[in-house]
Image (cartoon, rainbow, N blue to C red; front, side, top):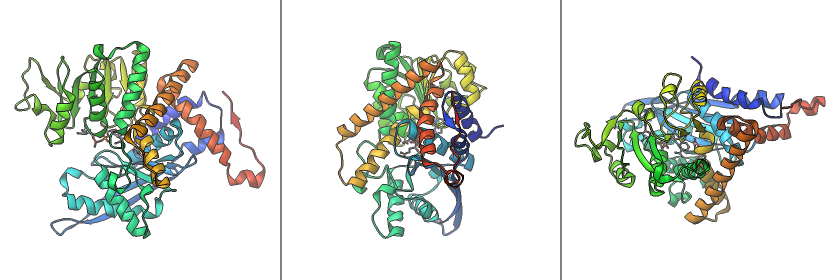
Amino acid sequence: MSTLLADASIRLEKALKYVSISEDAIARLKHPKTSLSVSIPVRMDDGSLRIFQGYRVRYDDTRGPGKGGVRYHPNVNIDEVQSLAFWMTFKCALLDLPFGGAKGGITLNPKELSKQELERLSRGYIDAIADFIGPDVDILAPDVYTNDMIMGWMMDQYNIIQRKICPAVVTGKPLTMGGSKGRDTATGTGAFYVIHSMLSKFAQKPENTTIAVQGFGNAGSVVAELLFKAGYKVVAVSDSMGGIYTEKGLDIPSLKRHKEENKDIKTLYCQDSLCDMVEYQSLSNAELLNLNVDVLIPAALENQITSINAANIQAKYIFEVANGPITSEADAILEQKGIYVFPDILVNAGGVTVSYFEWVQNRSGLYWRLTEVNERLKERMVTEAEKVWIIAREFDTSLRTAAYIHAIERLGEALDAKGTRDYYLNGITPKLIKR
Ligand SMILES: NC(=O)C1=CN([C@@H]2O[C@H](COP(=O)(O)OP(=O)(O)OC[C@H]3O[C@@H](n4cnc5c(N)ncnc54)[C@H](O)[C@@H]3O)[C@@H](O)[C@H]2O)C=CC1
Ligand SMILES: O=C(O)CCC(=O)C(=O)O
């Protein structure tokens, strides 16, 4: 069984065949630059001491400081964090953001901790990694089961250690602490811009388009709501407890409100978890993936579509809002079936793009209106999606390979421009591999 990072690297290998890039740059792109593993002691509310395992990986920082979220989840491990940092590297290059790729995580189920325990843990994480982060070094942000409140604690802890105010060390903060308008909805909004513009290429009209969304958190619920408002028929959504389906289309704003009140999404339509089988059906996360819909949006976790279930997918288009929801083996099966897969490093890049805007605003001290943030976001997302589309047609590759080609060209150029000390010492020039 290959690791997640090994599987992620297969995408890099595929794209390398089409790109002029030096052997040195390729060698450097295959390994994370820094992988930090820390233990975080936390005093629990009952007086006991619990040690949590945390990570921060900086995969590459050639194009700028490391950038990436922090995940709190029971399955967090070093392989997952390295893969997520790998994806961040290519995502930032694809969107032409002046950042490298990084990611962090803590292995825990945050639902089992009190708010006070969560705050002590978040501050403890910053104590453990403070020497390895900073506005010009590596910048944090939210990811699965982390949010603006946690980002606020992290920024405050970093300020305490530095004895100065450093808002640009963390993005996705509360607005009152220097957060950007629109960061809370940026991942879903960016995904909506890509989906809407790409579906128009297939003359896919919103009112005739059925959509299923797996994952109803920060990313999934926002994209589902925007698609609903644009007239698309969102027929199924799910969260970690399972999902709900109706042929006539769900009322997404009501579902969102229901979920915000900490309720199971199924209970809006079903008194218990067993639904009235005529109009609404409850379904598992696995069943949602197999629905006969036009568009499938995985917006939860990685490895959801694998060699085991890829043959059952019926959607015509998949937009990856989650990071890494499809394995490389499944990619091949979906390609054979003629399914268009729009890759994570493009589709979910709205989050980091507005994080970049937040970092810029923190450093300039001048804050933007929401319309300004969203206009700039749309312009970047649609422009880079269009470039990916053109590259895929030019080289007759999948959209994923095209996205990697586009990102690697930018990364390779930066890696070679930087050079390495041995060139200066020996006068060697890097060998280019020509396509
Ligand atoms: N938050 C952000 O800015 C960004 C998030 N992403 C990616 O989007 C995905 C979702 O992240 P967020 O929405 O931020 O997280 P979140 O913590 O806000 O929501 C996660 C959602 O997934 C659901 N979920 C958890 N396990 C599940 C399972 N096994 N099956 C189905 N649903 C499940 C949860 O119930 C929740 O609704 C992740 O892959 C993340 O890396 C990507 C780019 C940026
Ligand atoms: O906003 C950011 O800096 C990173 C968001 C993130 O973790 C991701 O795109 O996967």
